[in-house]
Length: 257
Image: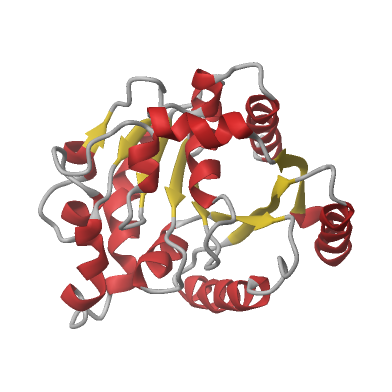
């Protein structure tokens, strides 16, 4: 198969972007897919969740500033088969450092272009904002996966994000490229709470087939796993969250088959 580049994005924080990025990347790798996870959040939560050092290694900031190539920044986490490019707080300076670059939204796209043939999936964990870093991910991506928390006001912010995606789609068409919606992923579902199911039904009604069949439930094991530097499947392979991320990976592979 050809490489699929997926940006995991939502400008709202706390919706499960990093948890999804880490565990989806790991689950895809366990399906024998060649996976590269790029941490695009200056907080480096994805890097830390896999037990990787933010300062010992070359980072995505070094790549985007032209100080090294992707291959020089690739790390191999102990508990997952996916490759990772880490981040750190220096990435937060990208907006200022590239302010005079007229093509600054294409930095990431250019950086990964020659690596598409080496991977089946490139997953990008985006920061909770719609700044230059997220724009870079959307210009580099073939599609975006949007995690949405099964809680009140979950749809708030989706409209703004989808409008941003539409703007990028128009600009990418000029470049003879495309940006699709990979899917909306419902996360943090508490099955005991009636209002959570109401949100699920509302989102499915609004977005139909764009919503993944797989839903990620609230799970304590998934919350603990990153604190010990492991994806949830490596930490607790039989817990519900592990099963759900495996199902999500299979759903994505099937959709792209």
